[in-house]
Structure formats: C-alpha cells, structure tokens
Image 1 (cartoon, rainbow over the protein chains, first blue to last red):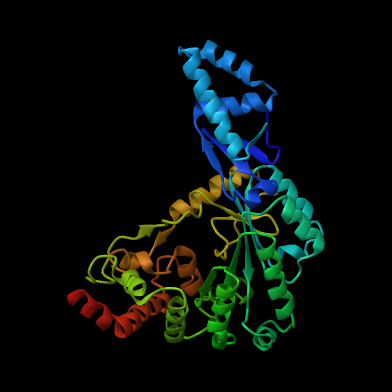
Image 2: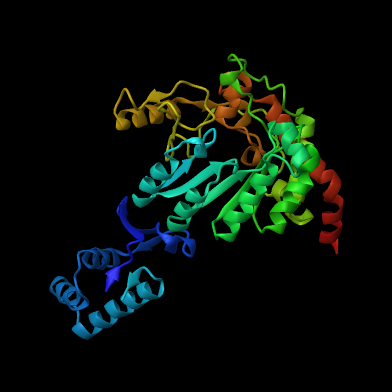
Length: 88
Length: 300
C-alpha cells in the first residue's frame, strides 16, 4: 500500500492537506483536509510503513482497543483507496 | 502559499512556461492561469493532462471573427475558440473571461451562447480601470471605456444572460433599506483579501497588495520576500477608503475598492463617481425592468 505520487501532502497553517496535482486532479480538482490522525497515517505511508506497522505504532501512542483501532484504520485506508489517494 | 494565479500579459509567451508551471504544480500549489488562449501548443496540452491546472481562465474578446479582429487587431478567433474546445474535451476546468468594451458590445449574447454551448461559465465585466500606468499617471482617464450609463446598461445585459429576474432582483435587494447614502463620516479600511491573505508580484518582481494598484510596490529582488510581504501588509493597513461610502447601503455590491478609487482619482479616500453612478444605475435599471413583476408575484 502506497500513497498516490500525484498527490502532494502539505501542512498548511496546522492543517493536513492533500492536493492532487497529477492526472488524478482531472477528476479531483480541489483538495482534501485530513484530521491530525489522518495526516499522521499519510506521513507514515509516504515513508513506506505497512498497515500492520501503522497499527502497531498507533497502539503505542493511543489508549484504545486493538480491534477498534484496526477497524478505524482499515476504514480510513479504504476510503483513501476509493478516492484513489492511496494505491493498494 | 496555496493558491497561485499565473497571468500576464500572456503567460504562454514565455518559452519556459511549461517548466515553471510544472515545477510550481509539483510543489502542491493550486494553480489557475489567465490566458488569451491563442498560444496553446501540443506540448502544453500534454503538460496539462499530466498536471491539470485548478482552472484555466480564457479571455474571449468577441463572439465572431470580425469583432475579435476589430478589437484585438489579429485573426485569432478561430484558434482561440478551437483551443477552448480542445481544453474542454481534455477535461480541464475552464472559465471564459469577457471584458465588454464599446468595440465588442454587440457580441455579448454570442459570447455567452458560446459558453452555454460548451458548458463553460462566462464572467463578464463592463467596468474598465483607467490604465494609469500606461496613461502618463492620468487618473480617471480611460478613453476606450463606456460611459458609466452604458457600463451599467451592458452589465445588466450580461447578468441577464445567466440570472433569472428573481435572481437579478435578489441581487439588489438583499442588503438593508436604502438610507442616507454618502453621509458616512469615518473612512473604512480595506476589506478584501489583498495585502491581508493575498499578494501580487509583477513581471519585474515588485510585490503589491493586488495587480490593480498602480504603485511601485516592493521589490522581492532587492529585499527578502518576508520583508516585502510585511511592507505590503503595512501599506494595506494604512489605506483608508472613502468616508462617505462607509454608510452606503450599496457598498456590499459596489465595485468600488481602494485600487479602483486610486485609479479613478489618484486618492483612495475619494469616492469614485463613475463607479458610484454605475452601481446606482444598475439597480435602477433592474428595478424598472423587473421590480413590478416580482412585486406582483409576491402579492399572489
């Protein structure tokens, strides 16, 4: 799983923003704003971190049941894949 | 910085436009381009397919080859309209800009029809800033523009191309009742994005609050960018707009801004009579034409 190379991540005034600039921008002309956690996951993906490594890292950071975290992360990643921001 | 408008003159005149554009886009900027659409090459189209711009605004100066030639003194109409269609077919986000002047006024409907046929919005203006910089510092002088009466009349005609009578009436009745105009006593600071969240850099590297200011500005070549931006912000904060406009019920829908006041009179605190008259006339024309019908609808 990796980020779409045609999408640029920027931290603008504290906001985690994704800007499609490659051919994906033909369909998605605008920008996406992510939550703090979404921005964190995106940056890990950009560094080549796998889904399991992301879940492990987040479990160390947050006090949350693994099943719930896993479901939330998988839901987020699926939505990003559906939006073509992430490639499987 | 998030949004960037590349304009000119004509930006596609630069031999290195494709490289400049691509590198800026890769930095994650949302880029719009103002162009006359006459110099679109296969190479540029390929660049735009790979890195689509946020929007391309194409100036269309006429609705026919004859008018285009009369106004622009070149025969680019067919090329420009073909290029607009080409960009549309490629899926680019487009807008047509139309500066209506006494030389192309007869084509207003044709230009809007072209936009409708190709499903491209048209933004038209009939107000022309006095070209102070190329006019020998003569403020308020624009020999090629409409009288304010005609500027109002044709702006209403433009708006009729895409607004319903109800929308036209809504546009002039949404603010408070007409009260005591021209009686404000305190000047207003600038209230647009210029010099607060936006800046303009000229071809020769001078930063200004917006491109309509005729001032020298601050050179980003001779000082640090942050320093120029701070000076632009300070300058913007020091500008006051006409006191007498501050109490006007029409100020929200009036085109009078600080840059226009300066272009019209040389002073941002002097009420621009041309724009004031134009705004009032527009309202009167819309009320005369549509006011009665709307009121009778409301009485049903």
